[in-house]
Length: 590
Image 1 (tube, one colour):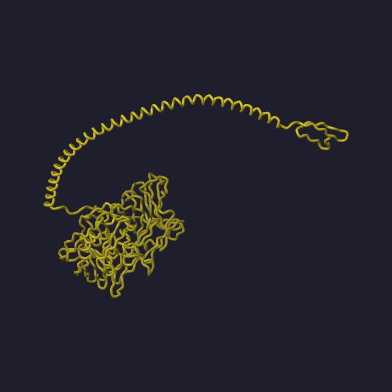
Image 2 (cartoon, rainbow, N blue to C red):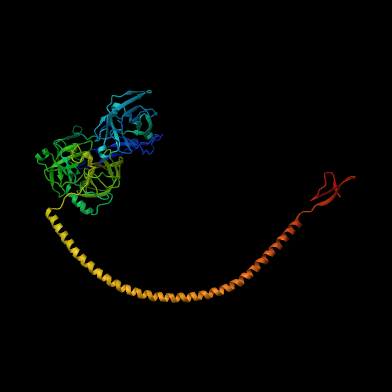
């Protein structure tokens, strides 16, 4: 059986702690995913039901909720399992890994899927000794068709379904066209062996009651003004200028004895925030501010070195996201736009080791659209937590959150983890204008003023008029010069062509005369040579006949001749005439 187990790396937060304080771990997302399945197992191919992977995830530091995914070749349709034909999708679980199914999660029957991560009720069955029973465990089935994701997800309680730490699983989708079950696909086949982590995270002391919350109505996002790029894999044309423009928006967050990074986001503050006198909102990681949740106050150090007060208005430990409001305006950054891809150029600005304004660069090394996280190669260190990871246009893709540990003492360099900006939505900001931060439409922002447009139009008209006059004059002068030059060139060319033709004609006449004389001489020699040639041919043919006759005579002479011998035996005798004769047994040759 083919099995694949994904190694689990423990992440460490990038919060720098001063005076030896204990660091709280960043939220960890764990998952295992089957290898790519390129075989469609059914005999009748249907691309809508073609599975490429099945996978299992644990999110948000939850030790109980577990997520399974059917990952398709293309975006699912809401009615693909409610087509009146009995089509369905399942996650099959083999608890004791004996090759027999112990539990199954089903897509709903008679209900369309939703398009925006909102779940519908799925089904569950347990299998014991060959018989099945409907399970009372709640199964949430959901998709994200609005954002173009190509999966159907299942959420269920590990405890309710009695899921062990190690089990086998596979995904399956079937299209029943009027009872024809020839269209189906497994992923993987035969199964994937899953080993769950013993613990997904460690919980910070005193944070259990503050894992998620807000003290003001959340701000909302604006229609974004990001700038599109022709190739996001290319570095910015002027990185120094880009960094200079972003730095005023990047701040250092200090909470008790620790510090991290944050950034100001382009957003519309709620009336409650405005009424309290706030003018800007900043985003950072939850583990940066978790020790300050009691009084909800942090110190914010701006790029110019000044320190202002910040109020924690929303926080979510599971997604490791927090929002801070300030009464001092901080220039905002754009954070909605094109979905990032592997290979994109990225930059990181932050306060590693307490040193503000440090820039590092790298690329996006992987993107997980299911968990809205990504990894990158730009160098990060303790203190970078919460800082912006931005693309070549300056748009924030996510928050620098953690580095991976290979073992207890070895950190994986060049392996940074980021919480993508979609994780901000509904946790610390309401995404109501453009709901998908990784799917918004980039656009240029800021038109020129009326005076600038008028001056530009007048300058353009004057330039076009001057260009027209210059063009007409240049055309007339060029035409006259061209005609004069053409006349001179034509006369010269005619004279040169005539002289060349006359010289060529004389050379040709001389050559023709010489060729005629040579031909006459060669013709006379040819006739004489031809006669001699014919005579020689006749002699050769005669000699060939003589040689053939002699060869025939020699062959005849070489043939063996019969010989006559007399053989005696007492008074008896025999006369034998043969080629190479011999006496019979008992006779002697005489």
